[in-house]
Length: 339
Image 1 (cartoon, one colour):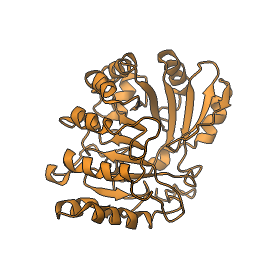
Image 2: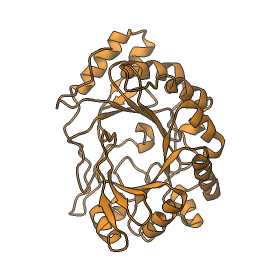
Image 3: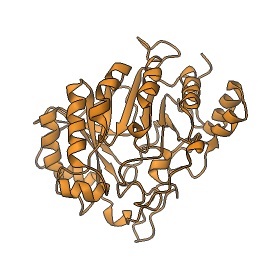
């Protein structure tokens, strides 16, 4: 195995998020504009190119890969690609193998793909669900079908996948549903994660008006539920978890704005166009696609990855000013980087 991936702050990178497409069958208000202009298809990495890059990262010590989009399941032949990555899953932490392959999805196509995910070696998934009310769900997603997403979640559970429901907390939009979501997740045996809205690109919505600090939400939830801290050994993401005694499930909190979670960051993001982002808030990236398509060697790609890690910031710089100023973050949309 090649030398491990170490960034400029001495953090070991073991977690890669891979966007396989910027396309999606929804237009969630916090994620993308309603009238989206997606990348031309030739600009998107082929599965062969994505697989080559994933292999390089795995050989350098990446143990967890999460596939994202856009909506990853809208891409044709995605099951075959996931299956090929699943072949890299090892046993007992073998060198040069994956420990875990996961997926983030909006659930709309899960009913069709759930069993294929299990067969490929995926054991758990994250599903975005911001409301249990069909009309509100339609307004948030702009074109999503509530029944389809719910059916997909049930299909995933029936296939044996562990499910975490992701909810973006939006003040005045869905903050009256959090207790209902806890109850429902308890009924279906799913964990639940709340995420602060992040200033990524122009979506036509004012994220400052929607921003809801999760320390306030946690305080409110504690009035109705018994929350016990959970230590997640080897946790690969930014969520901080508590167990809900009444349901037995976990609730996670991702707080990029109210509480910086970067000190132990172990991840980088590969966008579907081959750009490598070392931080979600990064304005710049290194272009791995250019090297791939110019006939570059694996050593050339490894050198470019090391160059990027040498510039990985210690902390992100998302900011929602308290003085009422503009939300500050990168101009690209979340769907471009990969959720």
